[in-house]
Image (tube, helix red, strand yellow):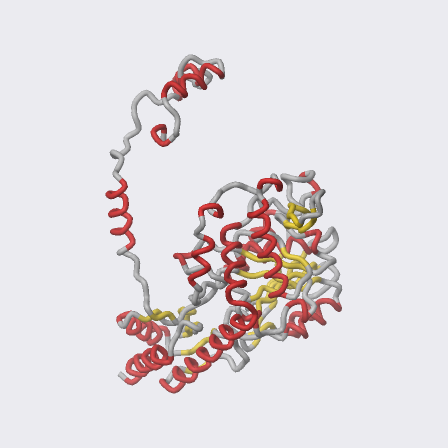
Length: 441
């Protein structure tokens, strides 16, 4: 890396002498001789920029990019307006600098503030933080926010994405917390089981809306039951669905979380993504990470500052509610630009188109011979049943040969299908036709 450091050998020598050393060997004299490297590392010769570009392009050609996608399960293909990348691609936003010093970080702080504002409008909640790593982390952090001395148990619906449940369990294990899964019934949370499991030791209940099967949960009933037991309700939401569904704020949820990937972030082989978190006024001071606030300077000019930093780096470790040590600022900026570019009306149109396409896909697949597994309202995902696992594999293989990524296999012949505004009627008809051919073969 020495050749990438922008200073001359003479400047390096001057810096060494300023530190009291005569050479690099002298600087490392505190390291035992037996631990020092006596020969160059066995690394290949460096490449030119052109050679690197060619190598990267060759690697990229190995990727399978499907022109037609009917799969979601936590990461979704949506249309991204060109202005999103145009704005977020500006050099001044692509910095690793953390905005500790407000006086020289106003642009970054404002971008985070705009993201928080958009999330609050989307969720109907009072305050949002500066984002966390991903949706699963956001859900786990929310569960920890709710734990108290006498209320240590977290209830999680069986209809929550298994990846989210796994992260919640990992967080709980590290903090000696208990996690209990509430059984499902007909594709949604079993309300009777939820009511029976709630007790004086329950801190919160985590509900996904729409859930892992695409079904819409009865969140109003869940809120009433959970609050009746004096526990907190956490809703993990799809941000596109929030444009048309009843918001967590309207339902009375205490915390709203979710994966922000649908808000302008491409699939990108799994990341980087961002998690969003929002809370009501009673819970806002427990939000982890950072919150950017708006204020005025001594001249009365609007400006932005970091506030309510409830993490161990800023306050006493034993008082910290989280050890989240960063925010996904560039991803959060992307979401903020996407929300601004789309606006409420286009967000609503995108959500309605997602649902319309999903309804059309479900109808066509049913006509082709697959059977719907759940009879419940859905947004843009649903589960279909083949005769058995072998038949499901045949269907997905036939679609794959036609450059179509079919539904996510769930086992026992079940497949989780998804449609967004990116899918066309022609794509739906073609996929259904292939499914029919397999089933009739």
